[in-house]
Length: 347
Image (cartoon, rainbow, N blue to C red; front, side, top):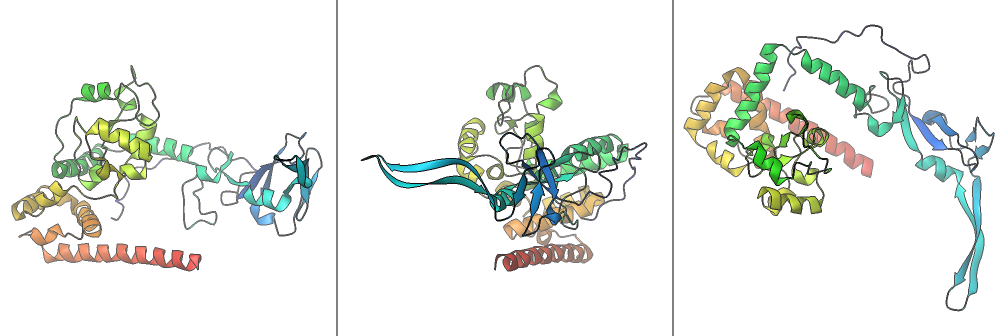
C-alpha cells in the first residue's frame, strides 16, 4: 500500500555529529580482542581493508597478527585412558585467518555516534552496508517522537483501520484483571514482574495476530511486557516462541498447540463471514474511506488462503478489483524476484 503523505516532520537542531563518524554510516568494521592474553585492547578494522594477506598491529601492545600465522595457547598431549599411553602431542593454536573471519561485524550509528554490532541495525537492502544508518535504539526514540506529533485525524484513521480488523475478527470486551491473574502478573516471555506498573507497560497480546483476523478474548490473550509485546507484534506464535513455550501457552490460552505451532493462517470463522455477500458489501461501505487498506487485506488473504472475498461482493466496482489485482501481481513478482536471487546465490 502506498505511504500516505506525512503531516509532520522532525526537525533536528544542533545535532551532534562526531568528526570520526562523518561519512561512516555505511562502513562495516570487524571487531575483535587482541590475541595477546595480557592485552586488553579491542581492535576495530574496516572490513574492506582486510585483504587475503593482512597484517594487523595492535595499537596497545604492538603484537602483529598476520594472515597465515597462528597464536599458541598451550601444548597438549592426547592420552589413551585405558593404558595411559600417548596417542598424539602438539600445540593448541588459533589461526589468525579463522580468528578474523569469525569476528563480529560493527558499524557506526549516524545518530548516537557509537560503534555497535551490525545486528543492532535494521536491514536496508539499498544501502552499501545492507543496514540502516541509525541503530534500532535511535530509531525507536525517533519513532516515539514522531508518533507523539501525529495529528488527530491521523490517530482517527489508524483507529478506524484497527476497528476494521477487530470487526472481522469478532473481538469483544475483555477482563484484563482475569488475564493478569492467569499469568501471575508476569510477562510470559521473560517472567518480569508487572505488578504495580502502568497499564501501557503490561500490554495484552493477540496470541494469534489480529492481522490474521483472530479475536482477542479474555481466554486467549497473552500478558507480555512492553518490550516483548513490541517484538512479538504481528508475528505468529511459532515465529516467536520456542516449542516448550508454545506448549505452555496452549495451556494458558486454550488455543490448540497444533494451531500455535502451525504456519500463519487466517481465522476460518472470519473467512466464512467474508463469504456472505451482504457482509462483504457492508464492510466495503463502512470502510470505503480506507479502500487501500481493504485491498491490502484482500490480497493478503488471497496469498495465504487462495480466497478472494471481492468475488462475494454484489456492489464493488470492477475498477477496484482491477487495482487490487495489479497490486497483487506486483507483490507476487517481487517475491518471485527475491526467490530467484536466493536460488542463484545458493548455486
